[in-house]
Length: 282
Image (tube, rainbow, N blue to C red; front, side):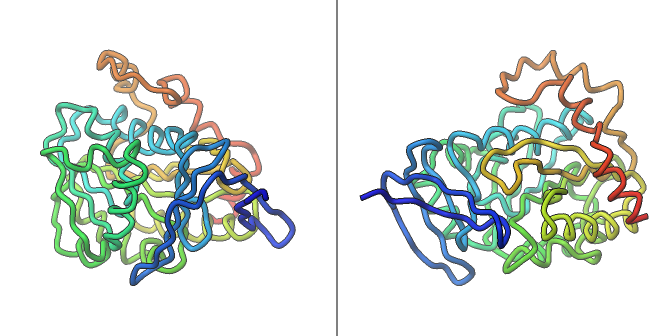
């Protein structure tokens, strides 16, 4: 008998993955967590029935959420990751020896524990000596910080359930206050393609523009996410993401599978339909 996992991308579109084995199914106080072993994508984490991480394509997401801001400002030393329970964002950050402090605040400890057990590919660096894990609400955590971080990465799920509060203007204001004068905030910015994600993209971008003086969007392509076309937000107090620091990144010798400095520049060159979406928001 064949076993398939199916995610509904829209009422009219479904995405299916053939499953070798259902490794674990558990519920935390916040959400339902499953790990599958798949034929095509390796181990796969789903939360509340939505694909979060697969071993085959996670490098795309994690490299783009980390290396774009790190190349834009080579002086980043203190980083906060909000969410990111699979550990992939922290893994990429630990590749920079000059980073001194990596704090990760994740509301759901069970997500971290499950990934440490079943997906060490992403979670293996959570015990790095520079990493401190906080299992609490990121919204409340950030309120206590004042110019504490050079980079804040909001590695969130969609704006439903535990992730909903990470898409509010008040949260973005607290992030602004928690950043140093050259601080950067990266946010998961949904997809511009299907209506549900497009609506959240426009709403979040409008709120961020009320807070940050520099607001840009860049794109990446993720096979297992709805439509495949997804966006991050690059938001800063003073750093332009297309500056003269970018090419210096190559001197660090970091080996990547997706990110490179040419792609860095190109990722900010958006299709017209996305540009129009942002202009309509303004």
